[in-house]
Image (spheres, rainbow, N blue to C red):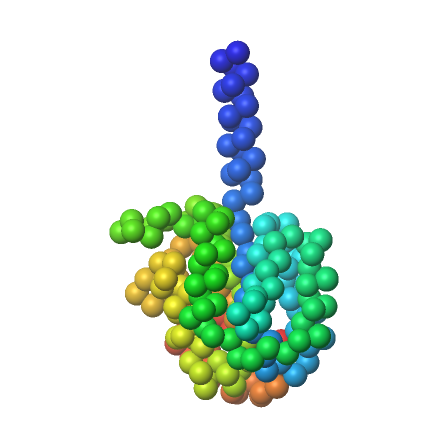
Length: 190
């Protein structure tokens, strides 16, 4: 019986360890001109991994949240029928933090040295380049997200955190190159 219990817990532990990566995708489509292109890129990122993926589509005070691939297509189709206003970044951060806390990704924030319970935590933000610059979304949204979860230290992402920002490519590459300067994360056009 002891051997059975030991083997059972070992299998559970190995299974939990095997699924030790997660993806988080945030989308603000309030200014997006090419929704088809955005939906295609989100689908590509969402489906590119077998890891657990959470999709958070900012939609006024009622975000669309997708936790599994079966709901992805239906949820993405909903964005064609409703154009939200610009997101309230602070409200979104609160909602995101609540969502992430349900998945026990980060140890208690009261702990002085929080630790990530994942081998990899990949974050993707889909934003509009103009709003990114004009509204300082890198500070108000992204840094607030990183700091409130203690994922940023000394202006650098902590270990196991990967952050990619996708900006709608209605601007030339020189503009995007200027936006990229001195950022601790990768920025791409889509």
